[in-house]
Amino acid sequence: MTSSPQAAPEVPQYRITFFYGPEPVEDRPGCLCCTFNVKKRSWKGGVQIAVEVDERQVARAQAATGFEPWVQRIVATLLDAERVDYDSRARDLFVQHLCWLKLDLAIDAGLQQENRRIAADAFVRELDAAAPARKDRLFAAILTELDMAGYGG
Image 1 (cartoon, rainbow, N blue to C red):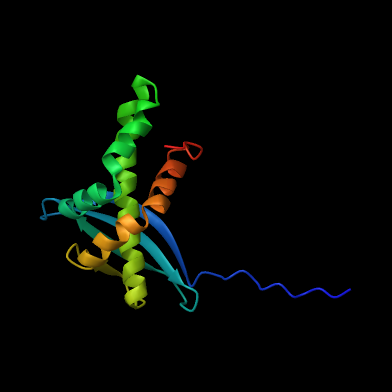
Image 2: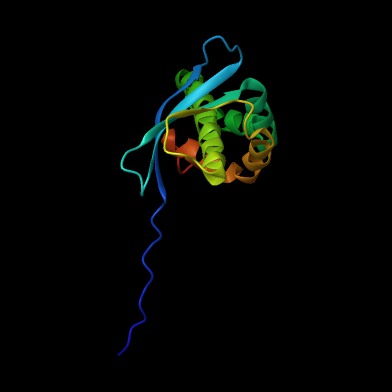
């Protein structure tokens, strides 16, 4: 009996870990930032990448993905005492995952092994196009972090 060899699963080129955020950027009203630890397999060590988005980018992404009606359906299923906390957390998670998406765009464009900041005005058009295209994955990640992964809304 012969068996066909199975291909090994593809190992991601980068290991990305969310570090903290979103938090306001000092001296930049309306700008939020999330920080990630990024380690490429070929690098000896990782780097910290701060990713900025401004509130207009977040609002456009929320509108393009239908986030507002989606989050309202989610929180409507919860007890009154939980709604405010879940709504706030879902909004923070949306910004975190939007920043992660922007980080992915920066990695695709080529990333050097150095601590850096990706400014709010970088990858604007690309992020505007990518957010609705990755809506399902974005919403699934938020539901998982909210421990609501089985929610079908």
